[in-house]
Amino acid sequence: MRNTIERCVGAVVGAFVLATLAWILWAIGTPGDCMSGEIFSFAIFGAALGTYVGWRSGLRMRAVLAVAVPLCIAFWSLARDGWWSKAPPRQAPDPSGLGAP
Image (cartoon, rainbow, N blue to C red; front, side, top):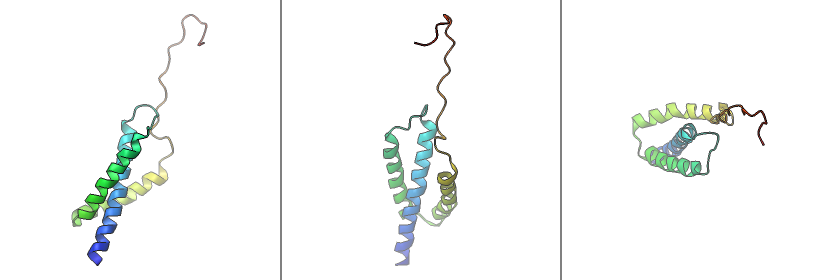
């Protein structure tokens, strides 16, 4: 029974860690400030992979997950909203002096 509980906890932790990692990687790789709806499919894939990894994990992988969990919690609690956004590109001044329409 204990082995099943450990595997279930490992699966939940693995899903949390890899979904967070997927979210971070998607946000870093997305240009501008658009986090399109595709992020959710990417995060779900990360969670599914994390569930599998957590379920099948050995002692070393559980140690890696145990180190990663506080880092993921820190990310979700400390990262400000919109941290991935980038400013729009600067436009050159209008030489005609008329300004933008």
